[in-house]
Length: 225
Image 1 (cartoon, rainbow, N blue to C red):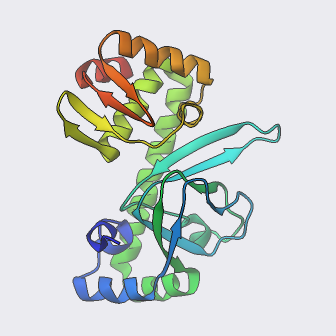
Image 2 (tube, one colour):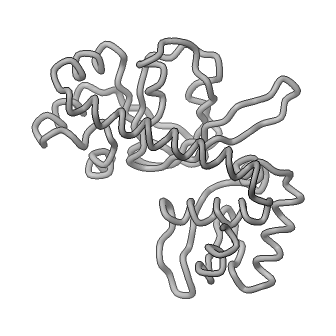
Image 3 (cartoon, rainbow, N blue to C red):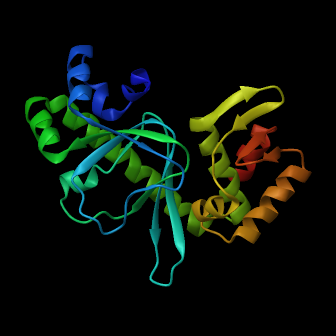
């Protein structure tokens, strides 16, 4: 487990090394394989999680069985904190999309931490505000942006967090199936595949197994506007 990655999480940013080490020792550790479900929508929530390695998808299911992928989170990101500030059932289902390692902090431990360190409270509130901004932007995209634009924007967002420079462009190992990518964009798989095929034909990207090589980021940025 790369603890330097864990330190990037908002929960740790306001702590010095000694306090961060003490907090990590207090947190539970768990490992998940792709497809494992950490918790389901509607479950009781009393733990905040920090991703040390791997990826977690957060999604919701409609009464008729359709799935909507709300977010893909990776190393250094956290989730599950809403149930600590606003006790109630989980609002989403958390599923591993790759081999994943997590650190968990229970409600009682977090309450004790916040009561003695107001700077941690500020860091967590800032993280919640950023998440709300992303949610608002996503809702606006669903209304005002066409599917190809949303696909381009999603790929660029994934590249910022999971991409790495390689010969010929930026390789984005997102670990998503075509269906999951479509759920993230909020469109049918057929429509998303059509947009991806068009981008590939134009030479903007190259599709790979659960990954994509972005070859012309500037064109994708213009298409995402």
